[in-house]
Length: 214
Image (cartoon, rainbow, N blue to C red):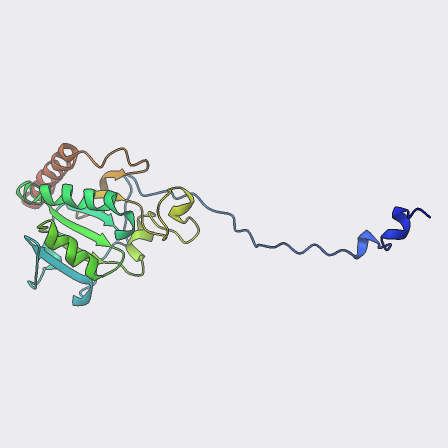
């Protein structure tokens, strides 16, 4: 006797089926980084010594940076994370090459790192870096500049990165906390223009000095 489909499978009411999604999906938001012309009024740096790290020709130094002097002139800020690998290192090396020229043009340079690790010490030594680092482990500054968000993990856009990290972003901000230059390396096509950085710092320093002497 031939078995029919009606006899092979038990009857059930579709209304009894409760759909349970395997995953909870979260709508991702696109990052909208701060741009030239914007102000970052909440920008401030902590005096906590553990958040600062300085290198000179690859060796760690323990001099004290005076925040008042650092923030009283045009400040070049660059966000860095070891998770960017060679791209991040290339950015550090380019900034290192510009450090003295930025200072001569009337500005300061500060690297914002998302963590403090021995990896940075090793890179600084191997590449003779002379840079000042500020460790933003809770990513407070990165969120203020909108180059980091838990709702927009960078691995969603970039292949080869397994941790959520701040974008490779470089800014120049004036003492008034207005951004006068920005560069985001969205596509790994190259880092910022050194000439643009120096000219922006120089012009900003001239304007700042003229206001002080007025």
